[in-house]
Length: 322
Ligand code: GLU
Image (cartoon, rainbow, N blue to C red):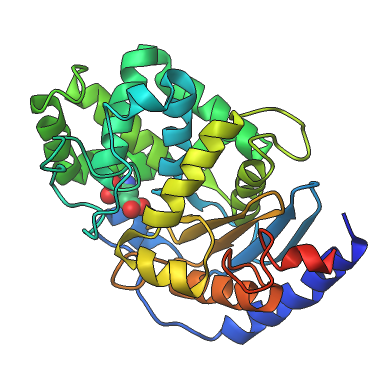
């Protein structure tokens, strides 16, 4: 891996960070009361190359809750446990164009449209609970920690806050159980889902988790194999079409890489075989995506030629920089 790419990133990341630092548009999520207490102006960015080299800037060690970014990893966990055919009996791979918390099933299948929406992620949590029962969360924490390259913890206050105010998600859980998506107790499945959303990460962790996906499922520094390559392929495909809530189409055009955002303000983006990006900035737009996080990724994609359909494309124009 070229030293020059690291040098380029060491110049570029501070430039992008400085150019966006004063952009204070958007609001922190408040529908989960604890999230409303987050310091809104934090801003950190990190890039980990698929060889493990790391470049970061700003508040890249501030902890925040992973929220929906976890959905990519719980989906990958279920794919590794059951394989794609059985997972398709639980959740589809279709973009829905609906808000993240929509209470709908795909009318053709009576399954959630995709695993990046709450309904799909709760279906995935149901599938995991049916595989692993009460061990589910411990296994998930192990896996998320392996993907990040360090043990992770839960923000108990956010978890309690989600439990206390999660009626809409609980309603989704009952709908799924009534539709036969899972048979496990709704409360146990929802507890798993709320806990997975409350895992604390930093922008550096997201970059490392993204780098693990970019590196065919193996953490570039620890060499731990976390996901099998076919699981990674399917997860990245669904992230590409569904990962950015109802901003997914604009993201595909403007950035053009698989990504997942969360209402905690995190965005994780993957450049296959090359690098992972983690950004944290808690002010969100109306779709629930980090305002500065999206702009930072647009800048990086433009400067580095990351869009998968760029004209010089062989996966990414970044290959030429090597
Ligand atoms: N825990 C959040 C919820 O279920 C996750 C939402 C998100 O990040 O999109 O409402």
